[in-house]
Image (cartoon, rainbow, N blue to C red; front, side, top):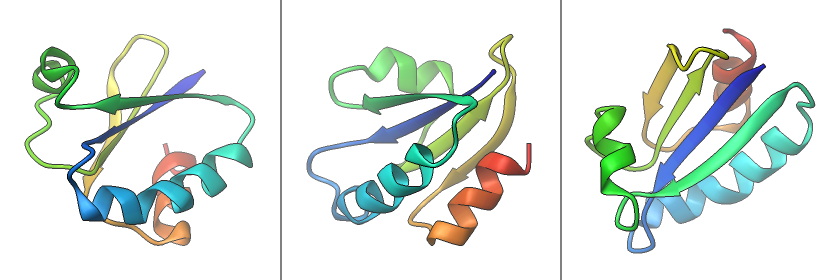
Length: 86
């Protein structure tokens, strides 16, 4: 099963813009695990995945290998393609 990690921060306007799109896309995909991570609360996890800016979405496989990674805001189509394209 793939895991979709969304890195964000409370102060980040693009993160707030991506949230409803992210929620909409991920609720329609049943075979994924979704984890949302606030980089201010969990900097060690952001560091582990080398997240340098927010928002960042990372898709990993069951062994925690990164399959895809994209930073910045995305359209529903872009996010869907990122997740399903792996």
